[in-house]
Image 1: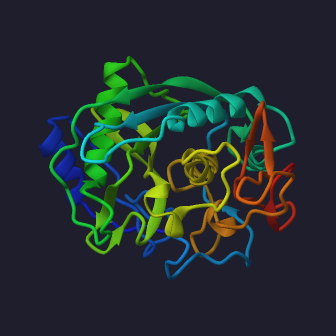
Image 2: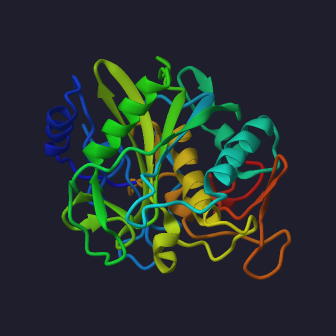
Image 3: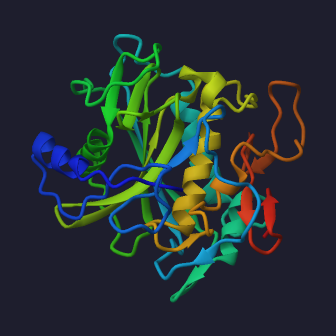
Length: 326
């Protein structure tokens, strides 16, 4: 994905949270390619947003950085439950089930995660090896809006610095320790009607649906993703299908996008194409052929015991988008 260097984000986190911070990555943007010094990976473009990465063209190339050879996932649900900032009843359960199913099917060739195994770094190839480590719900109030977004449905706007602070605080409260070998990832799921921006012009729902990145705080390196509640504005971020009859279905589509991109490019210096697009970018909003389900509830992935409707991921082996194998 493409990104923008905004050093103010690091300063804001250090001052607002009181955390010792160093080498904090800046918010994402479409204006700079993956691998640019001091930036982080960025965005799943909203469906209507201009400037989507090309879905054709060159394969991904390796730029020397590490990949996630295996991965541990953690889910954070930040949901105060006031002012309309709630989640549907099944939301966290469906998402937790998804992460558990992705882990249960580790090593199989039958879902989109296996496509990552063709990529490598100096220590070897990526293994399809995922393990869900658990979730936590944070009912604490949101801080004062750290940004201002143009979407009328939102009533609070979180900055990237505030999202990063939530990762650090919840991880510490639950004894979750990021691994030193780049193998742990934290997903922050915010409630309905909650927006976020990485600069005054680029915000959730009007421009993006999710993003991933990395930062260092207190000498600890974190890989994370910001996962807004996609059905706040389904016309921008909805997948159009809900095989689990839940608002979580559309969020899982962009969660899978960010998860696969972090596996292949956690620090922004591993695998991306000549335009800066990562594997998820090149296939964003391309779902392939459904396996079953009625209209509005179709699925194209059977992972563990679950049915999901997820975008495809880029395969260098096929020079195209795939749902299974490499």
